[in-house]
Image 1 (cartoon, rainbow, N blue to C red):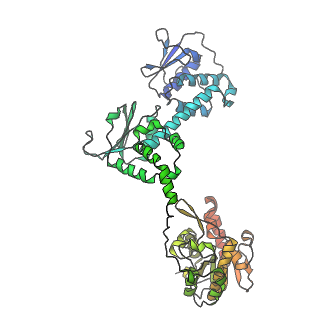
Image 2: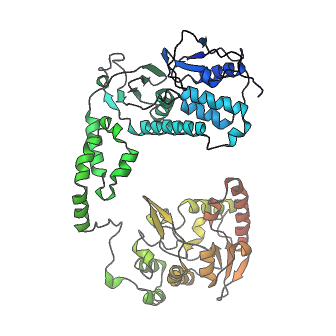
Image 3: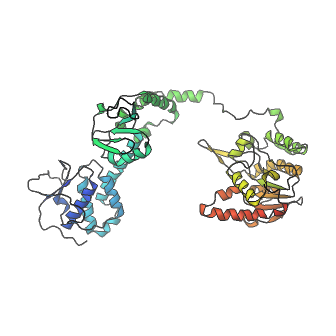
Length: 511
């Protein structure tokens, strides 16, 4: 930068407005560097307190010049620093270490005089400041996680006796993070009046603005209320002894926070009982899952070898649906809510065949009623075709899924599972006798054609089955839902063009 060190060895004292005065620190740094003041010549003060000197000497102001940070532009220079340094400053000034400002200024000074320093991640000063920043971030995370509010009913709050209830919490942060973290609680509890008391700084939200006040004592926080008892009951019931890892728990919930956490009183007793409770769980009988429908008696279950025979003896769609419901030719039927057969008139000229029912289809017992079905209905409406005039079904009649939490996530059926359902699909075709078939996706195309089909290559084309029926190949509507948002409109129009190939077999027009 070209700045020369100060000719005078006169020590300087910088007085900042508060322990977290980042703006004042920035202005002071620009002044000091403009005057060429070396890091070892500066002592930093926050508020009325003098910070210990980074370089080891006790602060004495009798023989030192005092630097008061001035407004931007007055006696300052422009500093060029990496963006990461500015971000680092914003976190480090919140740290409780009394040497933080001296360390930040020293690194800033060095950055101005050594351009290669910004590319040295192992520099000792940078590493020390990075550790401070990580400590601040961890303290902020713990405050978000461990604040516990107690409700104070209207009338007890003497300042606003007619107001909504006030929720008050006590917390003891390790660093000066209260003002920095307050906006998080505003966003999270915008509609609630709350206050967080800490030993050095308190914050209060009245529903429209934040108010910061001096620190408070632990006795200023209210005692436990009924909500705390409810929370303890919940914590006691969700405690899983089989998953207890005390070291990991103490790492995420350090003991220094336990004294202010209501649930901490339960950790000891619950941990002591963990081994005994785990053994009881292992020895206990397995939990019987709740099924949405009763199990079918074994004698009437249609097994794989009998599927084709059963299908041959059916003479109507209602009988076909009833027989499909009992099918256990593959494992999928044991876990689905119900079988989902096709629907539509026996006189339908076009039969649409999808892959398998989805979550909503499985619950409602009807094909194409979920997100893919809604897109399918939209396409029929845009083409002017009535859904009630077409037959809609799937190559696989049960929903195959895997659980992720409480969600049932679609899984593509295997070739064996699709083959197990093939007789039910062929019987539907025999009963409906459509003039044309539309295969929606690869699974449907393979089932209808008896061999793999390159859907992207053959989409919009007619193929001929062994029985002479024509099969139009196109995408499943779920493929359009997975497309990038910017590409969905074009993909939808291309899909409609595919479906228009079946216009000569067009079902009844919508009103």
